Length: 76
View 1: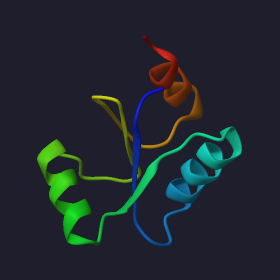
View 2 (view 1 turned 90 degrees about the vertical axis):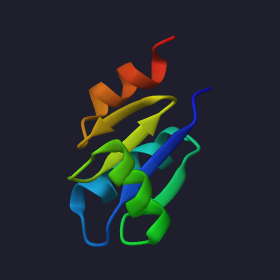
View 3 (view 1 turned 90 degrees about the horizontal axis):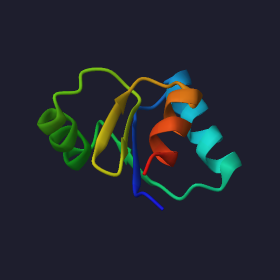
């Protein structure tokens, strides 16, 4: 099982979609708010400028697409 980190901001509908999807699939993840210092620092290090961002293992997905997430999450 890959480690998943979900970076969000308040009132972001795509962020909420990603969060609901992960919850519905029973996927455990660390939720990080981009407005908090830790979240902003991690996003800056990745060069991400839009949300949501998902870190899946050592790979980064910017934006929300369930099919892309499933592919990245299930890759070996």
